Length: 387
Image (cartoon, rainbow, N blue to C red; front, side, top):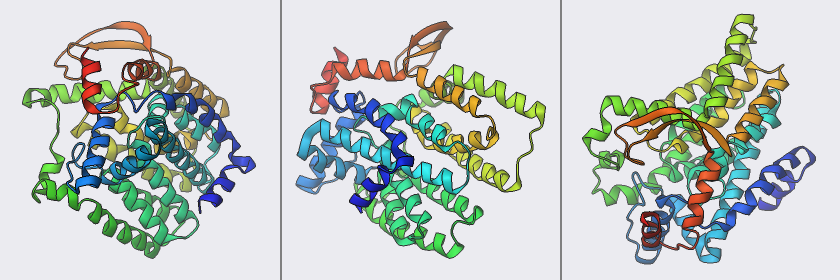
């Protein structure tokens, strides 16, 4: 299976994926990452495998990712774990490309590159974090479904859910998308979903045991007190972090071209309209979840490929717009307009406003990674970040 995947990747139509590979590789040497969650994951995997005592890295538990990271880390440390992230990222990108081709979405390569070069996806693909693992297993399942292998798809979906619990909603919505697009039957979708649920339940037994089977506790936010979660601050974080994720230039550009599209009253075929509706459901679902916990803009990575399917349909005959969008996405890695500065980093209850240029997310994260590049555990990370 692995050999077959490599062969598929090297096919002529897939060679454009070498672009992100070459861009990603230099970053694998910068340690585990700039997020404490990476080091929490290392500790959790070690404790679970050696003592069979599961203490989640964070709620609600990420067992599949934590166990994979433990074994890969034994083999080659941060370089190996970061290479694994790149591998899972490529599975995601390849699966997304296959999905676009199957759905007959125009300009699929531009859409895939817009995912690959997005600042938050770029960082997630080169650090020891779970985002691309969940997306990689999800799109691996999608690839299996495209080949009518419902059982394998179900197993892959369960691994995606085991990496991030919220992926279960995306599995449901993806199956709806496939039914609407008449790619699979209702029976095939039911088989995949049933298998996914069976294995996913097993993956979440250790987290449930940790909270003494009081399942609601695994959804409890882990940051800040009640003042941090007031309605005004929740809305403010939600809006601000959405803007940061997409970047001001990209949002303004999309606003202008969508308004232009509405003025022109461009006709959309009925089959494409159904796809827009389902993908928009995915967008709204995960934006709703993000409103519940507007912590890290990376949570929005899950909506990125499905939002781009909508954009690809809306601008199916306007390749130049998609190229411009890709260019803006790429530039936002390095420099973006800033408009707000929090009063307390990560725990803001207020902000100062203005307009200035600041380093993009990729640049800023790389600087932070350099500070903790030699860290092998959470204590080292916390000491260097504080100093």
